[in-house]
Length: 417
Ligand code: EPZ
Image (cartoon, rainbow, N blue to C red):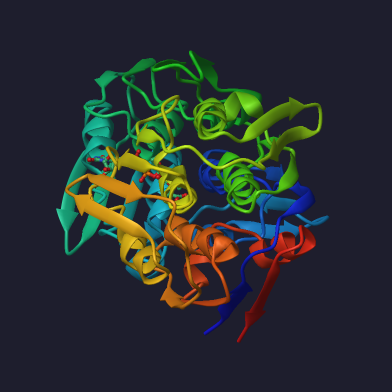
C-alpha cells in the first residue's frame, strides 16, 4: 500500500490548478443513464471514485471512450442491467445515485444498500420515501433495494433533511416522471446546480436550481448531455488551507469564490488574506492565526467536507477554537491521528475543542477517510520533521495527484509504495 512522506516546515508558494469536482462528476455520470445516445463529459478528475462510477456504468451496459485528458464519451443506448452490486456499492456509496436514473429509464432498479462508512450510518431513507411518493414500489431484501415503477409520476416531496444525494436522486428521477414534481427542503450545494444545468441541456424542465425548492416538469425523453464539470470547491478549499497553515502565498487557479463564501469568511477571520481574482482565489498568510468557532451545516453554511482541514489549521491558531460537526455523526476520526502529531484536541459528542498553538512533531499516522487524509497532510506540512501517512487510498478517492500539486508549491512531500 502506498504511503505519503512529508517533511514539514516549508512555506507553500505559487499556483495550483483545481481539478473537476468529484461530487459533481459522480451524479453527472449517473445521469447519463437517463438518455440514450452518446454523452460527453469534460473536466472529469482522475480519481478512484470516478473509475468506480465508470465501472458501474459498464456493468449497466454503457460503453465509454476516453477522449482528451478528463474527457469521457459515454454511450447509453443499451442500458440492459439495472443492478448495482454490493461489492461496488460498498466501495463507493455514491453508487446509490443510479437508483433514480434506472427507475426513470427502465422502470426497475436493484441497488445494494450502501451501508455505512467511517463517518456515519449514512441511511438513504429520504431517497426511498421520495421515490415512493412518485409511485415506486420499493422493497428491501437481502441488503438490496428493489424498486419498480411502470412510470414515475410527479409528486410534492418535502425532505426531512436537505440531503445532497437524496436531492440528486429525486431530481434525476423527476425529469422523466409524468407530471410535475416539487422537491422542498432540497439541498442547495453547487454540485446540485451543476447537475441541474446538465439535465436542462438534456431537455429536462427544471426551475429553482440552486435553491431549496426544485420544480421539475417531467418529459418523455431526454437527449445526451454535453457538459464540463465544475471545479472542485473542496479541493480548492484544501489548498487554501495549505497556504494558510504554512504561512505561504498560493493562487488556487479555477477556484470559484461564489462556491466558497463560508470558507473564505472563516479564513479571513483566522487572519489569512484572501483575494478573489480573475484566475481564482489567492491566499496569503504571514501572521499568527486567530482561533475560530465553526459549525458545519448544509450549503451555504460551512461545508462538513472542509471540517477536518480546518481542524488541522486551528491546531496552529493562538487560542481555543471550537468546531461543531452537525451533518455527520462520526466525522472526528482525524482527531486521534492529529493528536499523535501533538495536537491538543478534546471531543465531546459533536463538538471538538482545539487548543492552539500546538507545536506539531512528525510521526507515523493513518488515514481513515477521505477528508481526514487531507487533514493529516495539512498538519504534516506544518509539523517539524517527518510524517508518514499510511492508507492513502482514502486520499486517492477524492484528490487528484495531491502530492504532485503540493510538491510544485514547494512542499517536501513524496509518495512511496
Ligand atoms: C454528499 O454525501 C457528499 N458526497 C459528501 O462528500 C458530503 O459530505 C455530503 O454530501 C454532505 O455535504 C457526494 O456528493 C458523492 P447527505 P451524501 O445525503 O449525499 C443523512 C466527500 O468527502 N441522511 O447530504 O451521502 C446522512 O446520514 C463526501 O466528498 C439521512 O439521514 O450526504 C448524513 O448524516 C463525504 N437520510 C446527512 O443526512 C438520507 O436519506 C447528510 O447526508 C440521506 C442522508
